[in-house]
Image (tube, rainbow, N blue to C red; front, side):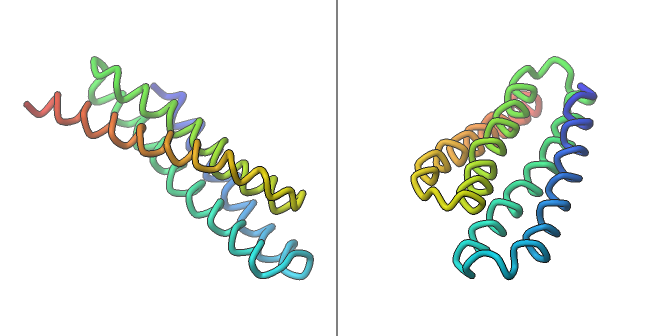
Length: 124
């Protein structure tokens, strides 16, 4: 599914832009603690952007493995919930948004597990 390569590429672009914004635009505007939170959001954002590109490639190689597509959607949901909640929390200083972040982490974990199962099923 080329859509995952497209989404992953755009997500990586956005991750790099947000990383630069944090390093340059937020450096003097937020506390060091909030800057670390921003950097964590960027780190997970970029890792899963590359994961989405990988998912897109694997969808082409293993088109019958529907779990791979499901893993891609979990990566996308995880990015929105995990990184998105951290970005909004830093920009708004609303700490309660941190309660959403673990939901994104769970989506990431489920996505990676789905990917592992899908590849395992194809290998066996």
